Image 1 (cartoon, protein in one colour):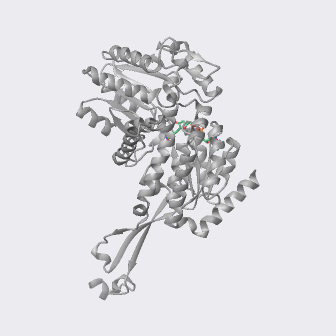
Image 2 (cartoon, protein in one colour):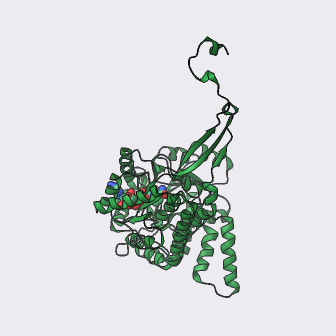
Image 3 (cartoon, helix red, strand yellow):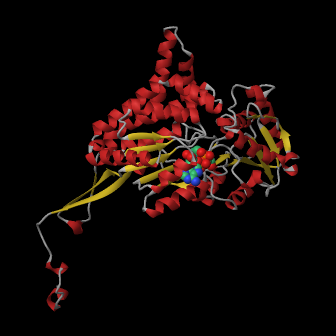
Length: 499
Ligand code: NAD
C-alpha cells in the first residue's frame, strides 16, 4: 500500500510539474468530464447513496448530484474570469510601474471527504482544486463504502487519471496520506481528526482548510402569525430530519426558544412531523438511516442517560436492524449531558427554553463557535445583535441549510424552462420533477463563502471561494528602468539627507 501510494503521489507531482494542468482547456475538459460522469452515472449514484445511507432520490439529487452539477457548471462558466489576472492601481510613489495579482495553482492537493454527503462533499472541493489547476488525491470516506467504490471506479474512467486520483480505505490510509508532503490539505470531518490533520501538515508547513462540525443552534423568536410559525417549523424539520436525518454539519442541532412560545411551537412541530413522515416515521422512506452500527449506538447512548430519557416529549423509537431512529424531540435535557455538549449528528432535537430570547446570545457565546447559527425572527434589531454579538461560520435568518443549498436564479430559470418543455411534450419524468422541486428549494450558494470559525474550522469554499482556496494569489509588480532616485542607496551622506 505504502509503495502504491507513493507511486501515485509521484505521478500526481509529475503531472503537475509537466504544466498541463495549468491550461484553461485542461481544467475545462476535466470539469466537463466530471459533469458527464454525473449525468451518465446518475442512477449508480442514487443506488450507492441508498445503500450507504438510505437516501431518498429527491434528497440525493438535491444535496449531492445537483450540487455537483451546479458547482461544476458554475466553475466552467466562470473559469476564464477567475483565471484572469487582476490589475491593481499602484500608488504614485511607485511610478512608473504596473501591478497585478495572478492566481497560481498550489500543486498536488489532498482532499478528505466525509461520509454524510459522500458524493457532493468529496467532489465539490475537487472541482475547486481542478478549476485552480492542481492535481488531486481524493480520500473517500470508508463509512460510505458504496459511494467510495463508485468514486474510485468511475473517476479514472472519465477524468485525467494521472491528475485526479481516488483512494479508499480507513484511518490507516488517512494516516499514511498525512505522512506525505502535499501542497494543500482540504479536510472535511470531525474536529478531533482535524487536529490530527493540522499537526501532520505542520511538519511540511502545508496549508490546510478544515471544514469541521459542531453544534448549530437555532434561535426561534416568538412569532405571532400562524403561517410564519408553520413555515418556521417546516424549515426546522427540513434542516434537521430532512437533511440526512440530522447527520449534517449544518443541520439544526438544538433550538433556543422562549418558554411562553415553546408549547405552540412544539405542538405544530409534532403535527408537521406526522404530516411529513406519517404515523410510523421509522418506516418512512423519506428518512435516511444512521450510517452504521457505531453511530447508531452512539446516538442510542445519548438517550440512555435517565435525565435525558425523561426529557423526551416526542418519538424516541429506534430500529436497531434498519439503523433508523424516529424524529425525536427532547425538552430541556440537562445542559451538562452529552447531548448538549457534543455535536448530535443525528435525528434528536433538544429544545431549550429561555425566559427572554436575548439570552440565546449568551447561551451561544458560552459554547464553542458554531459552523452556523439559524435564527427565526422578524426583529431587525435582534438580527443585528445576533450578527454583531456572536461568532460563527455563517448566520441564516428565517431558514435553515439554504446558506449551503440555495438556488441561483439563472439556473432556476433554465431548469424551470426544461420542466415546462417536458410538460408540454407530456413527458414528465420523475427525475425532472425532482430537479424542479430541488431547484425551487435548495441549492449550493456560490456567491457566499462556506466555512467555519474557531472550533468549526477555517478556510472557505464554494464558487470563486473554492478557486481561491486552491490558488496562491501571486503579486506581480513590473517597474521600469526609467527614473531612479539615488536617495534609496547609501551612502546617506549630508548631501542626500538635506535633499
Ligand atoms: P472523521 O473526522 O471521523 O473522518 C473524516 C476522514 O478522516 C475519513 O476519511 C477518515 O478515514 C479520516 N480519518 C479518521 N481518523 C483519521 C486519522 N487518525 N488520521 C488520518 N485520517 C483519519 O469525520 P466523519 O465521521 O467522516 O464526518 C463527521 C464529521 O464531519 C462531523 O463532525 C461533521 O460535522 C463534520 N462535517 C463537516 C462538514 C463541513 O462542511 N464543515 C461537512 C460534513 C461533515
